Structure formats: structure tokens, C-alpha cells
Image (cartoon, rainbow, N blue to C red; front, side):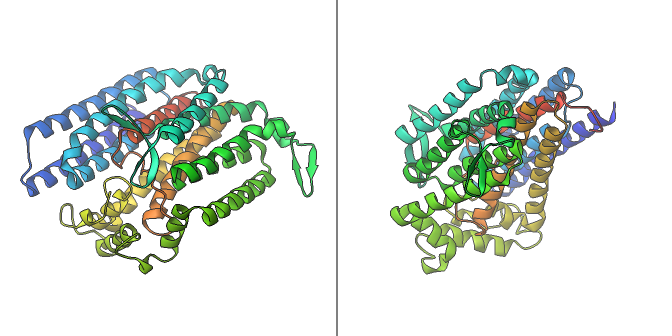
Length: 421
């Protein structure tokens, strides 16, 4: 067994031990142990081992770290959800199984990433259509109008829209890289290409403002806009695009703050949550108490009081981790995320085409920005955003889309120069 396979196997075994140990600790402490739950965990471990075997046989030189890290984080997420909401453990386990299947499918589809680039406009239209469906038919749950309900199924189209939009942006920007880099039109101190070449970027800015106003979804607005601007900078190397984009976003956000009360509430409770600690700022105040009581090693799994935080299993799951697993557990999770982002950027830097470079870089930026926004929100470093922590927060849409994203990165890494893995 070579070094690559040994590393992958060791990380997968570690993830299995984390999940099994977490299940036993939570269920035995709360007298909820069942062989049915143990059977589900066994099926999950078997499925991700088989997934690893299948993808390794078909993509022997691909990154050996991405998939095990994803499984490790998802295992921690399942353990915390079992602790917080035992009734949601089985649904989340089923979503993880769906995510593993989606990961495998994505790996095979994106092995020929350049073929996907030919359908860039279809991807762009699909992504925008999903956003418009959310804006038009979305249901307000938890303060954000980003859910669509179809009978018994409830999902977030924006979780999948972001992937389609990044594929479109990567293909569009790679085709027009020289036009964006060697711009010819002067607008005061700025040099920009012809307006028709940056029209899609302006359209995404407009959609971002619509999401902020109609959906009350500050997190997704920041996520889409930040990823788009960063990808434009990656393609062109021009700082003027970033300056103009930040100016547009600042102007739009200021207008939204002045005109719409729900935006004012988010900003006000971020600036000073103690003005209304039992009302509008209750979540963030309880989150801060949770982090403060966690200490270095935490209170111990099942020995904290994270359920005092509303919606702790979705938006504030990192606060529960901080309380019960402490700084050590929180740091371990952040390090795992850093490794995923690092490997994603490494894949981008070793990509052999501009499209795969921009696609991998865009996915890395998307992942890093989402993690930064949600952790920054629950620690009061940033305003609350309402987005999920990838692979850990409860939610089928988030789980499946995260595995699809990692499947795209895994497939791209196979086509890169196979230096030391």
C-alpha cells in the first residue's frame, strides 16, 4: 500500500472512530442507545469506504486528503446533531448518504471539466433561475426567505445555484481573460473593458442586492458577491475591479440599511447586542455565553447547555461545538477547513487550463468565505448571516451541495500535475 492510500485510509478510519465514539458517548449518557442507530453508522462507514475505493481506482492520482477531511467534518456534524436534536440524526445520516453518492457522480462527470465549460451559459441561466425561484417563491424560515417547499420536501435552491454560477463565471472569465486584463476604456482613474464584457458581473451585483432586500439573506448576498469579485480579480489581476465592486456593494448596502428595517436589525444587534439581550439579540448573546463557558477543553459532550440558543443545530452549531468541545475541538475543525481550502488552492495553482484554475480557485474562495462568514457571525466578529457551516450544520441541501463541490475539486485535482500528494 503506497503512501497516498495509507494516508487516505488512516483519515477515513479516524472519521469512523469519531462518529462511532460520538454516538456511543451521546446515546449512553442520555440512555438513547439503539442498535438501529449503530446499524446506520455502520452503513455510513461502509459506504464511505466503498466510495473511497471506487474513486481511488478511477482517479488514482487525485488529491487523497479532500474526501477524508469532508467525511471527518460530516462525522463531527452528525455527532453534534445527535446531541442537539436526536430526531434529526437519521434524516441527516440519509442526507450524508445522498452526499456520498453525489460526490462519486460528480467525480465522474467532472473528469472532463473542459466539456462542462461548453455549457457555461446553460449553467449560468440555471443558477440565476434557481435564485429567481427562491426570490419569487421562497418561504421565510428563521428570518431568511431562502427556502422552497414542494410538498414534503424543503430545500434551499441557492445552495446549488452557487455551484452553477461559479462554473459559469470560471468559463466566462477564462474566455475573456485577456479582455479583462488589457482593458482599454478609461473612466477617471479606472481602466475597464467594454461594458458588455462586465455586464454579467453587474447583473450578479443586482441579484445580490435583490437577495439582500427580498430574501433578507445577508449571508448569501455576501457569499455570491465576494466570490464573484475575487474570481474577477483572479482572472484579470486588476485591483480596480475590486475597488469598484466594493464601492458598489457599500453604496447598495448603505441604501438597504437606510430603507429596510430587517437590515438595520442585523447591523444594530451586531454593533451592540446588549441593548436587547433577551429579544432580538438573544441568539448572539447566548452564543457568546456558550463560547465563554467552553474554555480550553469544553464542558464535555452532552454536559453543556447549547440548546438555550435558538436554531443551534443550523446557524449556531459552531457555538455548541465551542461550548462542549472547547477551544481544542473548535481549533481542530477550523484546521480541517483550512486544509480543505489549502488543497483547493493547491489544485487551482497546479491546474493546466485557465478554466480549471478559475473553477478550483472559485470553489476555494466560496468555501473559505462561507466558513469565515458563519464563524464570524456566531462569534460577533461579523453581522449574523444565516448561512450554514459546510458539512456540519443540519440541512440536506447544504450537505449534498458541499459534497458536490468537493467532488468537483477532487476531479480537477486528478488532471493536475501529480506532484507530492
